[in-house]
Image (cartoon, rainbow, N blue to C red; front, top):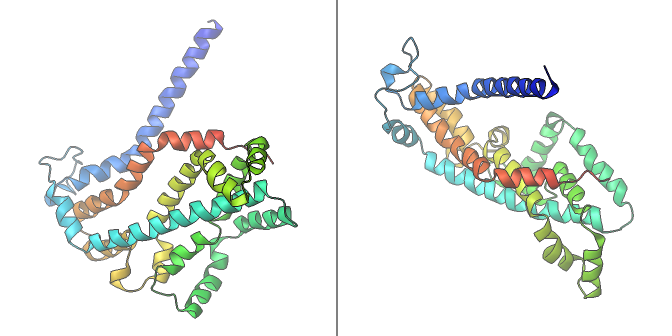
Amino acid sequence: MNRRTSQLIVSILTYALLCLGSVGMLLPFLWMVSTSLKAADKVMAYPPQWIPNPVVWRNFIDGWNSLPFSLYLKNTCFITATVIIGVLFTASMAGYAFARLKWPGRDLVFIFTLATMMLPVQVTMIPVFLMFRNLGWLNTFLPLTIGAWLGGGAFNIFLLRQFLMTIPLELEDAARIDGCGSFAIYWRIMLPLIKPCLAVIAIFTFIGTWNDFMGPLIYLTTPDMLTLALGLQFFHGHYGVTLHYLMAVSLLVIAPCLLLFFFAQKYFISGIALTGIKG
C-alpha cells in the first residue's frame, strides 16, 4: 500500500467518524422537530415515529398563543439589541485604547481586565445583586443591559485589542498627519477595518443574550417583564405534559440563533481566522 492510498483511507475514515458524530449531535434536534409536528396522541407512541403522520402545523400557533410569547419576544429583542449595541461600541473603544493609545498604566490595567475573566460568575452574583437592589433597579432591564455599556466584557476587549494590533501603524500615522484626532481615527478608520471581528462578537453576544436564563431569573419578577427563556420555563411548569407544544415553541425560540449562525457563518469564520494573537 503506497502513501497516497493510506492517506486516502485515513481521510475516508476521518470523514466517516465526523459524519457519525454529526448525526449523533443532530438526533436531539431532529427529535424536537419531529415532536413539534406530531398530534398529541402520537408523541409518546412506541416505537417512536420519526416522520409525523399527519403533520400538525397548528402546534406552532397553539403553543405560541398559550402564553404571551409575543410580549416575551418583544422583551428579549429589546434586551438583546441594547446589549449588542453597547458591547460593540464600548468594547471596540476599550480595545482601541489598549491597542493603539499610550497612557500610564495601560498594560497593568489590561492585565487586571483579563484577570476578571478568572472570576466565576457565582462569586460576584450576590454582590452585584445587592448593588442593583440598592440602586432600585430590580424588575427592570437595566441590570441585564447596563454592563454592556461599561466595557462590553473582558473577552470582547481582548479579542478586539488583538485584532487592532494587527493593523499597520502607518494608517494611523497618515490620519494624524491629515489632522485626525484619536476618536476620528477610531471611528473613520479602525471601525471599518475590524468589521469581521465585530461580526464574531455580535454573534456570540446575540446567542448568549438571547438564551440567557440566569440573569432574567434573578432580576425580573413580574410576568410582563419575562423573556423567552423564562417564558419557556414557565410554559414547561404549567404545560409540561404537552410535549408537542413545548417542542414547537422551543423550535421557534431557537430559530433566530440557527438562522443567524447559518447566514453569518462566513463572517464568523473570517473573523476568527483574521484575529491575531500578537501580544
